[in-house]
Image (tube, rainbow, N blue to C red; front, side):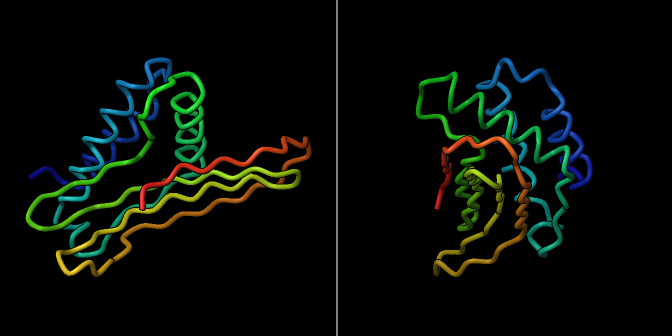
Amino acid sequence: MKALEDLIQKFQACLDEDLMDAVTTYKQMKTLLAEICQTQEVQEGRGWTWSPKDIERLAKLKDIVTTTIPTHVKILESVMDQHGTNSIISATAKRDNTKEELKISITLRDDNTQRKTLLEHQETTTTTAPSGSSESLNNA
């Protein structure tokens, strides 16, 4: 099995790609995230941290997927069913007149539906231009 660090580097390289082909990028990210969730380090509860640049790229990819591709593809929705463990990866973005918020989490759920959150990142930025919109993209 590949080292967690290698998988994370591939995932981040995927974020570095030109995001015009959002569906391909999404599929690559989904596969890498499933692999990351299977690594021993993640199974033992050690994850990784998201840099502000990663969050920015995820938000951009989410925007491309949700606004320019009219399909049921949802960014970061990956339900892995292997060895009796499901991983739930979700991204939520909210905007209002004063702030923008992006929250990403990875949760493992065993057969008894007990949940263990491996990673949760929330970032809030203050905005000056009112957008008046609220978006949510989730898999719970």
